Image 1: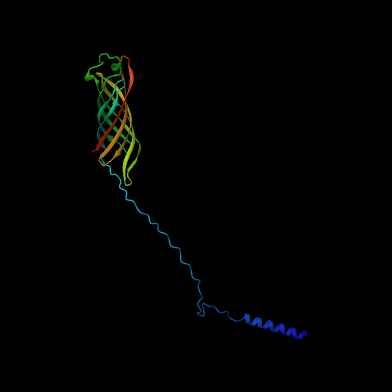
Image 2: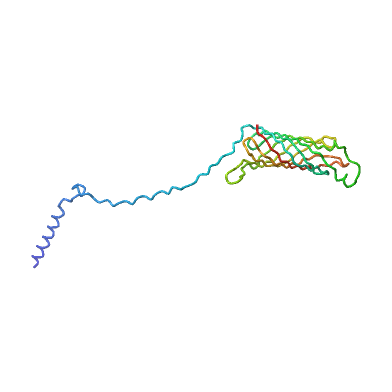
Length: 226
């Protein structure tokens, strides 16, 4: 019995050794093709359909000089509010700063003292001319754009001004400090519209007491670049 079991184990061992010595077959060498798994296609890139809006930028002339004409109203302290007209010339030093010369005129009305007291006029008619000029600087504080409708944009600016000059009033010349603020819109490359508010500060003694007066002016003007 034991002899039969030994013979069986030896036969299995010999068979296993014979199988391990057989040459292995390489599918690539014997010409047999190996199946490659199919690759999934890459996802398509979504191309956004953006409708481009045509934008036309305002073209400002390269000239730095600007001349303006306009009119408005000025409130001469202790006198009535009267219509005024003026002239301005500006030289744009840079995009932020400009030098400016302004001149204007109005005819002061009746003073509150003359109206209430019923006394004789304080001055002759030709002395009621309120004529001023000033030289100063301006600063474009908020340059930007304004839109009219959905397709038109215009260059704009909000600016501050300060200057000094002289005012002829009541037969005398008075040193004057002018402080102001304004807004401008460039309608064309050579045309702009301005709205200005100024305070002309000067000392007078028309009513017998010398005091500092504030004479506020509001003006709308049209300017031309050249």
